[in-house]
Image 1 (cartoon, rainbow, N blue to C red):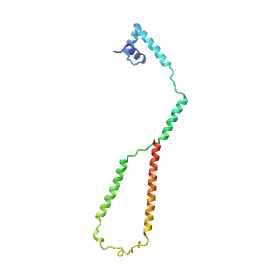
Image 2 (cartoon, helix red, strand yellow):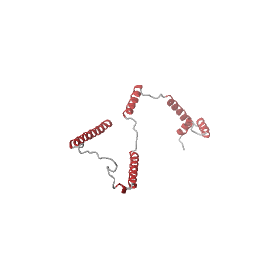
Image 3 (tube, rainbow, N blue to C red):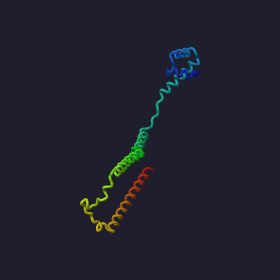
Length: 167
């Protein structure tokens, strides 16, 4: 069963049925303990209603909101892309290309190509003996090496820059 105080709080808050309301009204009118407790609770309830809530100063509120804005600016929206989905799509297209290429190569009649030469087709071979020389190949490989080193440096500098920003 509810205590006297709980019953009176329900009465004050309007959380009781109409039958309970009438019974409690009679108890307050006839019982001295209920009447005294009821008057105390009414006084407490009025004091609670008259209390003004404390608010932080405007400067504090502004500083909190400014720090929240700064945090949002530091962490831009990140789109989440599931790498498994992208990998699955790439694997599908690459495997489709290889399957089509394999089917095409399988369907070709290879027996008719035994006697085909460039002279039979009316084409003359391009003499590349004098064009591709050893110094030209060394220069080409040196250029490729420098380009590879540049891309590796760029990749690692971006990676270290991203780490320094997240820390």
